[in-house]
Image 1 (cartoon, helix red, strand yellow):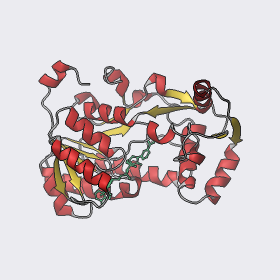
Image 2 (spheres, rainbow, N blue to C red):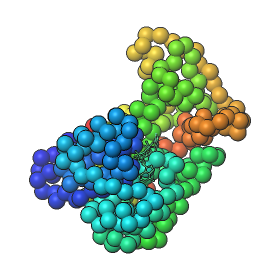
Image 3 (cartoon, rainbow, N blue to C red):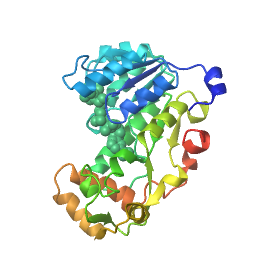
Amino acid sequence: MVPEEEKQDMEKSRVLVIGGTGHIGKHIVAASVRFGHPTAVLIREFTPSDPIKAQLLNSWVNSGASLLKGDLFDHESLVKAIKCADVVISAVGPRQVAEQMRIIAAIKEAGNVKRFVPSEFSSDVDRLHTVDPAASLYAVKANLRRLIEAEGIPHTYVSCNSFAETYLPSIGDVTTIGAGPPASKITFLGDGDAKVVFVVEDDIAAYTMRAVDDARTLNKILYMRPPTNMVSHNELISIWEKKAGRTLQKVRLPEEEILKCIKEAAFPLNILLSLALSTFVRGDQTNFDPAAGVEATQLYPDVV
Ligand SMILES: NC(=O)c1ccc[n+]([C@@H]2O[C@H](COP(=O)([O-])OP(=O)(O)OC[C@H]3O[C@@H](n4cnc5c(N)ncnc54)[C@H](OP(=O)(O)O)[C@@H]3O)[C@@H](O)[C@H]2O)c1
């Protein structure tokens, strides 16, 4: 929750969310509306065939958000939507991250944006040690940072670490993401001791929205490291075993095996393993001092 006095004192920026119907985007839209920002969402399809998506759009309209028709590949629609916003938050998916160059071009043309939050929502893209395909995805995000900086666009980079709703149902086993909790055995990578940060999507959205009008986060990386959410895979498995009252068989995948699997596996296991090599084996979410940017739980201790 935003403290009452902050709610009254702060002038709320007008927010445009691009990619609002996506996994993290829908949490961002909800938080933007909840925190009192005039909120618009760029939508590709006003009457989607997917009933869940249609219901989502209806709920936004009912809660006061505006829907603007547009597409990353329609420059005019981007400029028109951006002209009505102070803050642009992109939550487009991994397949569209490179196309965010188009948002940057539209922001330059519109000339009114006070803050741009590009679609990162990951580990810090400038501090990663992994291989392809994840290395290339992170390189695209890092190159986008350089473009934003070269163009002089005011920004905040959200380094939220791992989505809890993506990783926790399989207790951090990336080989079984989407399959729910393991029945009897669990795979862990490396020695299982690197600290990983899991942040609930609603909290990621709340921290992001608190940051967009905050001068302390301007042109900074916003790290999300809730101290109680920083656990190693071994610790996570042990917490789950205690709660579930049963023990899992542990299968260890050493680094050389992981590298071999990444080369041989098909999508999406190859990208999941190459992302996990960085987070679960090399500790890239916690192996540096967040003083390189600002840390969300320190700025907004009331959020979680
Ligand atoms: N930290 C983690 O654990 C984690 C996990 C997953 C993803 N991520 C990162 O989070 C960010 C968002 O990913 P996500 O998985 O939440 O995204 P997603 O669910 O794939 O959603 C993609 C969004 O982009 C929109 N979109 C696609 N093409 C578009 C276009 N041409 N023009 C305008 N909008 C378009 C989609 O709209 P439609 O509804 O029209 O298709 C949708 O709203 C990415 O940077 C990703 O790398 C992080």
